[in-house]
Image (cartoon, rainbow, N blue to C red; front, side, top):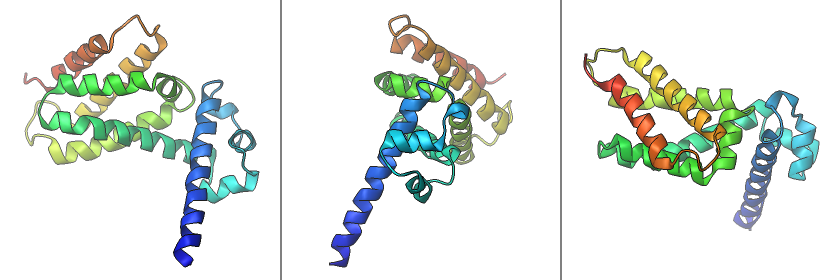
Length: 187
């Protein structure tokens, strides 16, 4: 009996959390985070204002949760390809995922969520670099991570402001691959 009640509560939590993320994304497509209120998020999500605070302390915390989830999905998609040491294929996978979710990623990378997305990508990239970076390299690992994330972030944000048909997934992946490979080349 307790597990039945628990699963109903868990289902409500998941449903509410998804409604909050969807509401925030929809609002981010129209205006920057600074102009969005928690009352708006709750209203669009169809929940009571105080319910918001059972899930997140602030709208920034909700945004951080959303950003982390999207970055985790992207990294999970790319890591198996990177394990095969094919960076171009990893960028194609990354660009395909972003293009398949273009509206979402446009809001995340070019709207009010851009700062949170950049920070989450930097955080996760630093973790990966600690595990995978070569011990000796011409560029310090921390600087390489910062440059790689900046190149990737700015290239993707730029791409998402272009008409969808202007640059193919393969072309953007090639641009990213060349930029990032330049950082990894020895002097």
